[in-house]
Every structure is written in structure tokens, then in C-alpha cells.
Image (tube, rainbow, N blue to C red; front, side):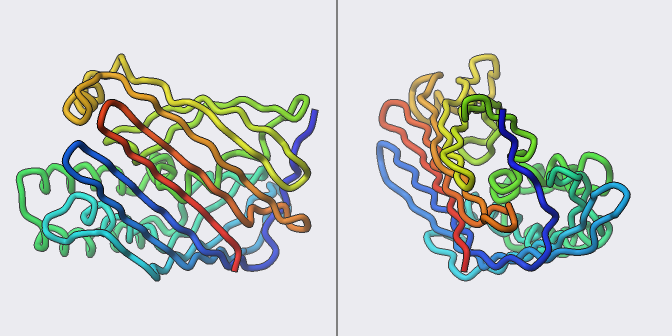
Length: 267
């Protein structure tokens, strides 16, 4: 059995984070790309608990393919800016356990919210903002909601807790973004060497969730879809922190297809 040993972050990380979204329907194809300059700064590590606080900064340097004419994708993009500066407490195995400075984060959300309520119109705006209000409220559940963010979910995936047997490890992960509700993936991780994990898996068709079934039916004419993921996760040899990753998510059924490619590279 093999475990990858976690080391607290000792020096800042400078990376590029990119999200590419492709959606194909019977009538049209759409693409959007988002590129971020991403930095992670370490703070002191507790001698007693092994917990460390880190700061994560995201600066957009490319936003392509988004339309601001009351478009849902543009709305979601603007909502995500509240997460562009986060302070997190990490447990002794490197997983986020608490959002620090929650009141400041809440104030940032209220400022963004005010602009969104003015800039967008439609019956869905009020309910969408109320839903996000509940997720952004300071408290114990805030960390779980923030982990639905694509960067947070990809970068902090519990690799230091994984126990590899014959270089294999199985796990379940929930991913947001392919449809309006999270989808659970059954993944197999393969430890290629001391620095690279490759992974692949399939998403569970959410047959027991009427809302998702209805969404699939409206998009594809079917209540089931082929859902898959593959990619890799690479470590720095000295720090044991991730310095590159790629995840490819796909949902297809009939004439409908949606793909999300998430990649991270070190500057």
C-alpha cells in the first residue's frame, strides 16, 4: 500500500488555471473559455495540529465566449468572482476544513449581488440570488458550498488520504457544471509514478432525481446520458503540492453534448 505524503506549503505557488466549456445542441454549438492567473500563499502552520492557513488569489486574464445579454453563463461567471480571493484553513492532510474571514467574504458577495440585481432581469434572477445567499452565509456549511467551485473541487481532491493498493485507488466524487445539479462520479485513480496520478470514471445516471431527468429530457429527448471523466494530477517532486492537472468531463445523449476541460499549469 502507498500513500502520498502531504507537506505544508512553504513558498508561494504561481499557476495558470483554465476552464473550457463546449456545448452542442441540435441547433447550435457554443464555446466559452476562462483563463486565470492563480496564486496560493502560505501562512504559518500550527505546531500542535498541523493545520495551515493559505490565501488563494484568482485574477481573470481571459474571458471569451460569454454573452452579457441576460445570459445564464455570464451570470454564473460574475457570481464566481466572489471566490477570487479566499483564505482557507487546511487540515493536516491538506484538505480545506474551514473558510477564514467569512464576514469579509459575505460583504464581498453583497456588493456583487447588488450589481447583479441591477444588471440582470428575468423571473429567475430573484430565486437564483436567494439560493446563492443561503450558500454564502457565514457558518459551518460555507466550506461545503465553496468546494463545489471547479478549481476547489479539482485541486483539493483528497489525494493525501488515498491509499493505493497495487497502484490503484477507487473513490466517489461530486462534480458541478455539467448540469444544474451535481453529478457523482465513480473514479479509478492509477499511480503512474511518484509524481503523477491518472484517473478515469463514469458518472451515475441520476435516475432517481426527477429534476435532473426532466432537464435531460428537455435537452436530449432522453432521461439517461453517457457521462465520463478522465485526466491526470501531477505533484511537485520537492513540495508534494499539485503543479499541473487536467480533467475532461463529458455528458452526451442523442444530439446533445456538453464537455468541460479543466487544466492547470505552473508559470
